Each structure stands twice: as structure tokens, then as C-alpha cells.
Image 1 (cartoon, one colour):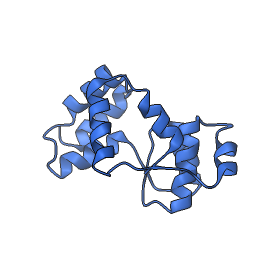
Image 2 (cartoon, helix red, strand yellow):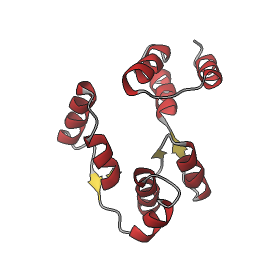
Image 3 (cartoon, rainbow, N blue to C red):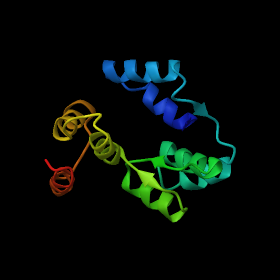
Image 4 (tube, rainbow, N blue to C red):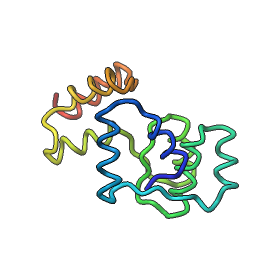
Length: 134
């Protein structure tokens, strides 16, 4: 489930494979766009966070989500303070490797950097790869 603001953000992506993957998960019902009910909470959060993160936190709180996928540091801090459990793309990669869905994390990190301009600091990368046995 994603709030409308996040749906709008991903709709503006220009990466062809990313757009194809999004289209597929929407078509298969794996990605549902949901309007948040508590606009006040999202508005308050958006004073300090971008609209996508603000709506994602508000939606996760509304539906009592098991997990919130969020990568921005400020958003993660707000979400944790609200009592939400968070993970990010790197947490998903670790889980994917542990479950045997991907053989290595390093190529995925390289692709995130080169194709999505995703920032991962060198110390974090070193720790992540060490934890994954790479």
C-alpha cells in the first residue's frame, strides 16, 4: 500500500525497467494506492518532511502497518518516534539475500547507485556487505 503522494512520485520516474516493474505490480494487485484519512497528520509532518514521506508515515500509522519502507533519514526518525517499525531498500536487499532471492548484494548496490542515483555511504556499504558475508 502506498499513499497518493508516493504514487505520484514513482509515476514521474523515467527509468524504463522501473516503470515496467511498477506497472506489473500494479496490474497484479501487489501495489495499491490508498488515500490517507488523516490529512492533518500528513500536513503537520510535511512541514518537516517531503510530502511522500509524510503521507507514508500517516498511512502506516492509520493502518497499523507491520512495516514501513522508507529510506530518508529524517522520515525514519519521525516514523520510529511514532512507534512504527521501519526498513529501507538495504534491509530489503539483506532479506532477499538471506531468503536466496538474490545471490549477492554488491551488484544490487552498484545498480542502485548507477541507475537510481541511490546514495549509500562507504562505511554503511562496508558494514552491510560484511553482515551479508560479502
